[in-house]
Length: 297
Image (tube, rainbow, N blue to C red):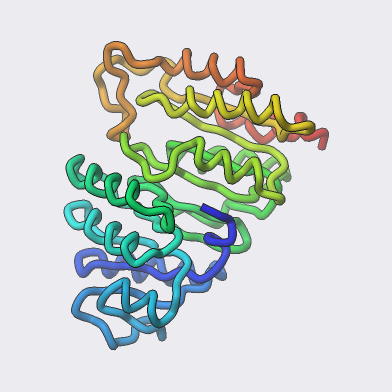
């Protein structure tokens, strides 16, 4: 995923069942300034909607308007097929917001992702990606975002909103916000997003928000340690891991946010991030003030 891919031409891929939601989102996205170049709806090719062309397949859209991003607004039972269609059409960035996609379908998506190198999936089960003041792809409440210098990566969409509120209130704003989603098999991991943010010129500081479930945070800690070791003036990293008091065996909102026997706890993840050089905070409300102090503002 490159920032070029999220800062320009976007189209919305909507199935019949979610047409109203996709239309509402497209209106907001266009109003935000994102360049939406068309929509995809099976059987509706050749029509226009919101004064934009509608295509019957993603392949047709790619051939005619060459979108950089596909925003997939398709219900969970059919989302995998829509995601795979966009990947096979070689759309550079595919964003899926659907929750409760069947595990078997996610396995098929992961297999398709492994066989190619042209497309990057963000999600599923995520609010999307936003470069404030430039481009919005997803369902995030964009009015609280402000263009600035802090990059944010989070497994939780809601906690990413809290981090946005804190960094906006601190006068820092955000450069790029990536919510990778809370499913067990995300298309983009925390490490993938960190790689972008560490190289992103507009990003001066990075916020990382993890949670129980999986081991993404441990791999992120390894990357942060290596980044700080090999970079003369590393960007400061502020981190938080949600689920410190979560009971074992209970899903905490996301399909992947569950602590099972033998899993790494939230406290262990937080300790790994701190040992790697990240500054831990107890809750999102202090992320802005903490980052502001680290940046010397």
